[in-house]
Image 1 (cartoon, protein in one colour):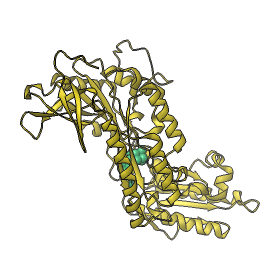
Image 2 (cartoon, rainbow, N blue to C red; image 1 turned 45 degrees about the vertical axis):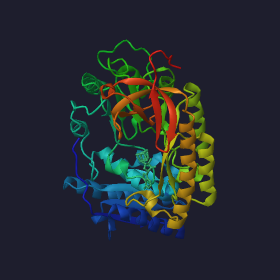
Image 3 (cartoon, rainbow, N blue to C red; image 1 turned 45 degrees about the horizontal axis):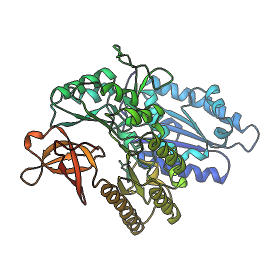
Image 4 (tube, protein in one colour; image 1 turned 90 degrees about the vertical axis):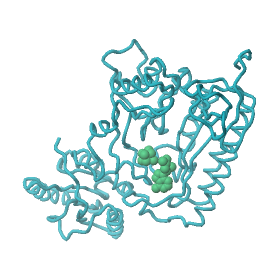
Length: 468
Ligand code: 5AD
Ligand code: SF4
């Protein structure tokens, strides 16, 4: 497929039919498109994007639209012949009423969307550009992405990152990633396995599989399959759970983690693996962003607060001690104090072991940046402080619960004090322990004896002590 760089300055022509409501909607669409670099064109002839904002109220209105589409088709073909392009969209009530019928009758149309979907225009434009093979501004070609990772990297310590997936198709309305990093792409099993083996040969004990949507990873099984029969997906492809089981067989690899996961891609195969694959660590970063269904919908998250909580319950049923971590945004446009309270309630219900929380920030080109009812800075600060206090108290309580337990700790590096090493617990907590430097790279049984704000302190188990 031929790839074409999108130019930064683009033009849009919106033809409005019908009522005042449509006039208002057309202005809204122009407003949404402005941060994407779309300036108004005087006519369809000099526009990169033409939107017919249609009206269904009078008889034959749809027919008028089809005849206009016929005229635009000729224009589109003429532009393409000259090496140009034109995106053709049908919006408004005819789009709502006729939907797919329009694409069947007028295949030159690239996008059809009703009034409920205007806020998703940037997402639809990005999807349509990707479908044509266009390269979005900061996107780069798929293979090149992974080539750049340098397959045989030098390991730096006993814990290493390994990228298995890039890009995102989720289009959360606050986020730039789907525009900047392109669509979801999974690295093939063979390449991942080769890199994991190479890391293991260099003494790596723990690998953290990375991806913007890591649990959307899917790939064909390797050509030399190692007899694993459980297939995650209906089509016989492998999902992340299966990949983890596969990598767990590599000699030397003792621990596997992955980040970041999306609730929508948390499939049963992965949950099963979290339950019974011993090398998968009991820690899951599963962002929810908000506890309010209104805000989750405005964020285009594709799940409710209840669905998220049900998912957490299912994961905990598979692995009861799992440490749950999350990301939160406060002050998304339209967030009321009730919405914020719903986030606090969700946090109380879930009980997080750790979390990251942010004030909403307007990112140009994202739908959220042009949404009405942006929340004031003071409000955001107050909400963030309340949320962070709650999350911090949960984190401290989770850490305190480890006191007295014996945890396996991967000793990673020298500590600040002489004779001290720093390692990680299965739950990703930092653990400070007095041990010989020669123990760096080993997994030790450590009794947790103290808790500081950012770490646990522990003692190596004496040889005659049994591991709990
Ligand atoms: N404003 C605030 N936080 C954001 N994040 C992503 N985009 C924004 C934004 N515009 C946060 C989300 C995401 C994390 C990596 O960064 O919580 O999960
Ligand atoms: Fe994708 Fe995550 Fe950004 Fe949502 S927040 S669009 S899932 S990268």
